[in-house]
Image 1 (cartoon, helix red, strand yellow):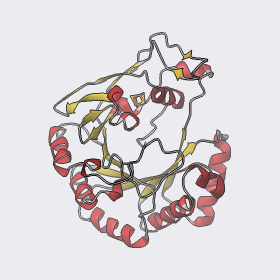
Image 2: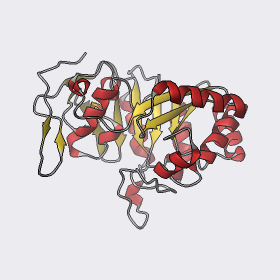
Image 3: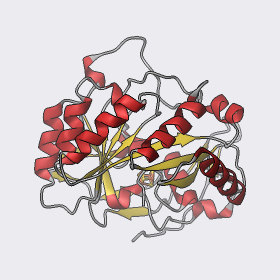
Length: 292
Ligand code: SF4
């Protein structure tokens, strides 16, 4: 598992930056169970106000992963015990070859589509059910909200996101898909309050087959738990595939600090968790991206 090497937190009063260093935990890849594919690096049909991506003004072919890259990754990991391939984004369903990518990944294992839900109308969901029924592996969905209150959630995401997400969850449920609703606890609400509120929403909206995942959005650097190593991080059980190589996790996709190698033939199995994103993981003490 992880090695705690006397963590400490430094603050810089002038810049107000907080740095998770110098002695960060080292996380070892225990088993490659999850692959996160950054299907499109910088393409989304929405603009959430809290999104960390700096979107370009126009589309570029380089924003989309090439399907050959995914074929190569699946071939290179054929002896690994993969549980799930996660299709992430920005918004993965904006990739022009999304359906082909989905079918390719489904031949290997279960697939989780991490989406803003805006493409999930009934026609699309019916189509995805047919795709799932072509084989034996399952499609899961991961959507997210920031609050159980529509106005507060949409302030963090985008206008209309709350309704689209609940509509998608309800329709997915009718088509017997399993989904996860990730609550990015931006407002630092009490977890019991979040669970009770959403359980009531699920009940009134007749949403079944949906699990809640509550993750913190910002670490509290003054909290003493912040410096404790996590028992379960995404980098202990997975790696992220981008067009230009392998990265430790989706947080650090295309970030030189998360670079693990150029392909699954040879990549780093150890992570020095020294970024501010790693601090979030340590505080959360569970997967931030994977489900289960
Ligand atoms: S941010 Fe990524 S590399 Fe750092 S601890 Fe979390 S999962 Fe691991």
